Amino acid sequence: MEAAAEDAEAHDERHRTAAENGNKGTEGRESKKGNKGKQPRDADDDRDPNPRSRQSKSESILHEGSTDQFSMLEAASRPGHHTTAAAVTSQVNESASDSVGHEEHYRTAGKELLDFWEAQEQQAKEDVLDRPPPPPYQPPSEQIHILGTDVVGRYIAHALAGCRTIPPVRYLIHRYNLWTAWEQAGRRLTRRRGAELDVRGRVVGEYCPKNKHFKTPLNYERIDNLIITVPPGSTVSALADIRHRLDYRSTICLVQTGLGVAEALIDEYFPNVETRPTFLLGHLTTAVGSTGQHFSFAEFQPGRLYLSIFEPSAGKGMKRIIKHHPPIERTQRATHLLKLLTAMPELNATGHPMADFFRQKLPSVAFRAVADPLAMMLDSAYNEVARNTYTRQLMDQFLGDITHVVARLPECRNQQKFAVFFQGNQLRKFVYKKLRLKDDADSPMRNDMGAGTHTDLDYLTGYFVRRARELSVPVPRLENLMLLVKAKKMAMISQRNDDIPLEDAEEEER
Image (tube, rainbow, N blue to C red; front, side, top):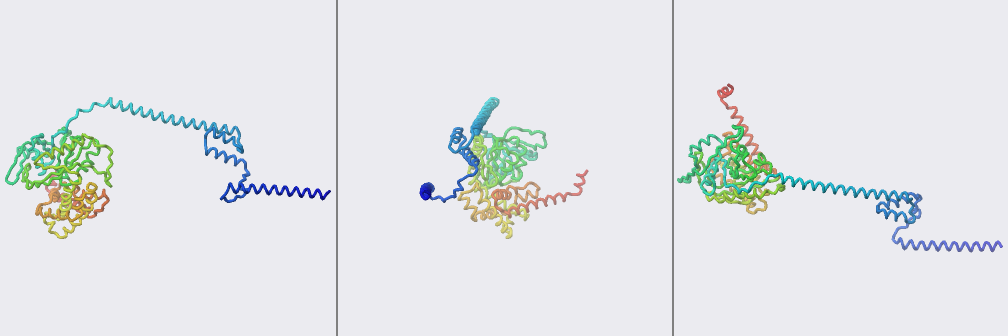
């Protein structure tokens, strides 16, 4: 009996072992099919001894995947997800309150934006109603004023006086002694061309004394078209007396030997682009000279008046940023003066783009930027500058600095003719040829230095130094030349003050 019982137990044990081995083989095949290519893991890694952590993980997955209320209920009803009804209700309430808060926020922001727009539209309507009606359109005036009693100013005034289709040109005179000379000349301008004299009286003199002598200006009439031929160093101070007569409807044409005067006037008087006049730049090649009388001149060789509309630069890098589109009326007035001057047969004026204008203007400015300071430092005429070997070497170095600056000017970029002239040896040839033509003529800078008046240094040599700084071009030799000239000017002023006679000083003390 005992043997039979032991055999039965052994048989049952073999069946149980076989069943267990079969189940393990089935599970192994299924795991191989489902996890083909994966590394086997330890069974202990899949078990989480803390059921609360499994619940928190499932809840975090639920919140990361979706915040929808139905998604929460569906996830809570899945098998194996252990949560309470209170937790589900709390989550649903929080989600609902968040969505309501977001909707209320966007609704409030949208209402505020609509209210702002309505307020702006209402304010615009009120401004239109309160604004006075615009004045009737007035065509650009053909009245031209001239500021400058030098030979260039006399030449332009004389040429305009011969045109009967425009009003008589108005000649602005600041100083009383010049006004007396104008009266003595019979209020007429005289041109001498060889043995021929041409006298014209269709010029109206306008006395504009310095404002410092009066509490209020004597004349408030607006100047529409103004031609300035005053030396560049005196232009800013000369315009102070008629600044109140210029606005955005005015056009100023600068016919001078230097460059950079328009920028100086804008910085000093017209920083606001809305009230700024329009500027034209002019370059006169007609050879004129003095006859020894205030209101007469001599014309030696006919030439041309080159004109171009000036556009202010934007500083370093020369990148222009247009913030305000120029009004059409302002553009019309600028082109109107341009058309007026080009229609004068005796002026022989022509309009050009800025690159073509600079091609004609810059060589003359470069000549005076180099020759005038050297003549002033040597205290000699132009011909002595050309004869001195060491002075010629200095001049070549200065012209090299100017060439480097001009080659990078954005106004003249991509201009083939311009590049050929300034990058070759033609600028040097031009300067030395002009030195020979000047012969024993005296430098204007030397005369101004001796008289103690303003020089044009800042608008000749100083123009190239300033543009070099804007373009980050090193020009140490030109900068040293400017410092030397200014140092000598200060020394001459100090010496002149020390040379005051003792008797005059005693009389001043009394």
